[in-house]
Length: 409
Image: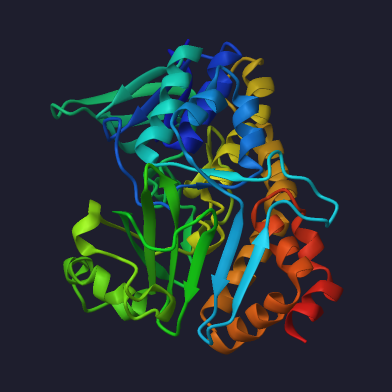
């Protein structure tokens, strides 16, 4: 008998939530992460409105823990086009779909990730920090565990009936499975925490230019997370350190941001992540025994703020497949994991299409100007689009030909 039902690689939102769901149901789970918590991550740190419902379903006081962390509350999103046109969409609207609350949460990943990891441990998952997974264990073509290296350099093997790869954008599990793929548009993000940013209210802001875009919003305590996202081509040949050093100068190149930052109020160094636009051919290993959750399976462009929602929803879908499969003896075959693949397609297909369309449009200034200009004049459409990116309005509502036509013509 193997010692673990599941080894979960990566203790971010996707991994911690998956471990929590499995452990609460009685599965023997070990959760591994190379970092030690609390730890920072470059992220929009935005929890879309529908994420509130997922947090409630995690139980064990997770949602209450988020609320105790004094998060910011965002009531909608504002987009500023290269032309200067401004659209504003609110989560509370008259399109017929109601968010769990009329606002979304936003808080630092140092706080949010720690809440989830602690909840997973309370549910019975064994959490080991400072352990880096280096390879997968194979047994007759199937995945049978992982090979990891501890902080003191020792290598050890963790055998398990299933491996859950939730180790993010640069997933070791996805690479070892041969599932990782890349596509355009490829972008790199530089994110920081800045205090006392002028003009920040209760809306997220997205400023688009010919160079790239900046996403920002409050995360509580008078601090704003600010993410500068540039095409990989604009960064290639430059050292990331140079972009970090010139971070505030880059922000000043966006008309809607000029004069709003005091560089002396930087409260967290600039972190870098990317390139984005990473996806997998499938989220289930060919030979069985492993699946991918969260950014390890698909990385959404931060413009739409899908990352944390897709991580938590993917964790639910993974647990819904794994728990019935684990009730039967033996390793988990590809057929046993197939329901997860199908459930992901049903849950995320519309979001994938919408996110890709938005991601491409942001890189085409003329199209961004046209769409934002239309939305600036049609608050009903703006609310609908913002609701879809907030995950409580079905993506198909925005993808309907009639709506797409109204956005452009």
